[in-house]
Length: 96
Image (cartoon, rainbow, N blue to C red):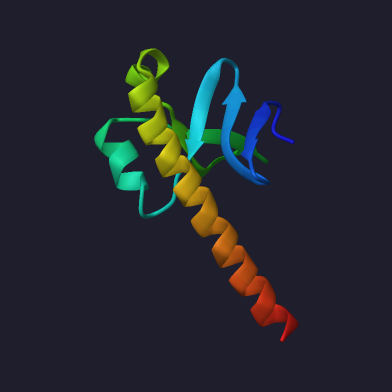
């Protein structure tokens, strides 16, 4: 799909791994937390333009501390759940 690996939890993509970098799902609610830590978004190039999607780097501290990892993973899973809920709501509206 994007040259990396997706990490799924209950059918939700919560993270991706590309070139040794782990990116966690984020959304408008969690993005400020990632930004406050200076965590870069996942970016890719399409037709000469750089695109960013709703994934940001996993903090370095989470690589070494399971408790920190659990906290950040919880944020990613929550963002994935909200995205799925929005998608389901939009899908129901289109079908109606």
